[in-house]
Length: 189
Image 1 (cartoon, rainbow, N blue to C red):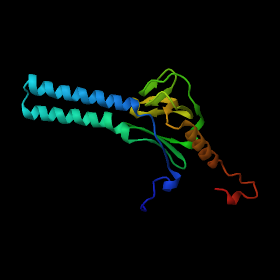
Image 2: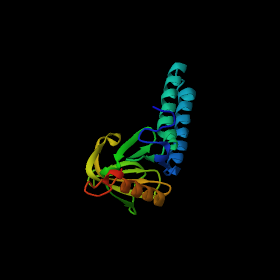
Image 3: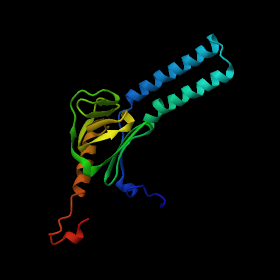
Image 4: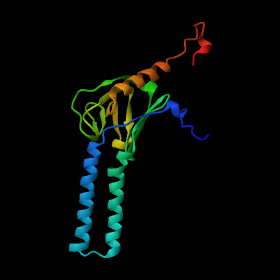
């Protein structure tokens, strides 16, 4: 792979869209307090052997990094034909733009974090309650990052909803099928 080329096109073809971080910052602080308290209890009150305390400390810090820090390091990306939704290192969904039927603002109530509404076949990938976008898929998909739930609608947040929807609209228009009967069909990509 050539240097500077991103899978799915050139770096210019790939756009990143940040999502809300407030929920994850609160969760990180809460997790850090719980980890510190758990380690203090292990060492001071239970007087666990050093090896045990170190082992449990490593597990707790790994949990803190995976579920507390990693959501602060990722963002949603859109390449030429693919939308990638991420929430930390735990959840990643690849959605072909051709499989998206509609996209628009979402004004309903949405829970924070990763949640699947099985009855509605809706998946929530949110870190904020503002800038919510809802996309509807052509066919339901299974999302293993949320215990294998099926969904045909995904609600997620982006910091700049209008620029995201405009970029998505432009990408979907550029994916329009070539009409072979047209005079300039050989010129269209």
